[in-house]
Image 1 (tube, protein in one colour):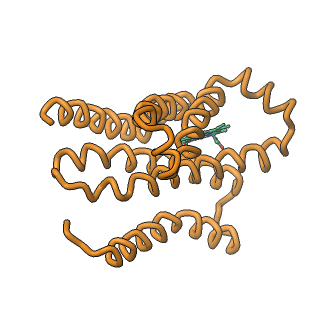
Image 2: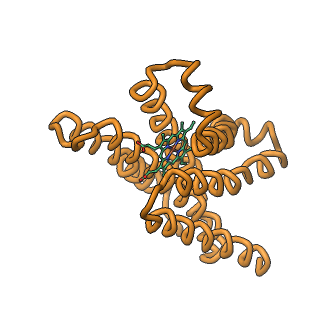
Image 3: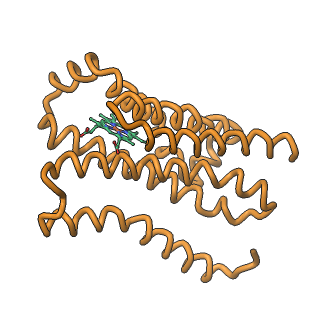
Length: 196
Ligand code: HEM
């Protein structure tokens, strides 16, 4: 797509504000008592779900670029990747602050006793270096290692899925939908790499 720089800036601004909307909606609902009977759980689950959705969107960009032979999807990779980290950080913050009130002792105990929390933490630990090295400056400094490092997004997606599967007690429909989306994105990526 041949657009001028100001047009790309305008499109990016729209994507940025649309990506912020889930948080704005949660704030509006919170101020209007609209978070249901268990507001902390609603906050927690909604932020976790948005982190996973942004992870899927970020994963979709490389296959989209390969299949369309257009470079524009990559213009949004950094922003959507950072939104994944942003929502995952808020999800973690709600847990640390509202669930366990920053009790380090309780956190260690919970993570050791609850496998799905350990998987959530492992996912977050994989997303952290991706966010920290997302700047152009870091991309230049790390050179070819940057690409290798950023492949951590694939194990992160799989761990996030496992985190979801393990915490859901009965209805597996939602995690199965995300599993199907991530599976398709990984297959398309591998296939398009073979063709390229
Ligand atoms: C240290 C990091 C993390 C911790 C401690 C954590 C903790 C939790 C907890 C306790 C729940 C259940 C909430 C409830 O039942 O009220 C949950 C749900 C969830 N988390 Fe995490 N999580 C972490 C990281 C992540 C990351 C990185 C992602 C995604 C990228 C993620 C995605 C989800 C999803 C999708 C749900 C389920 C939402 C639903 O049931 O609709 N979590 N997490």
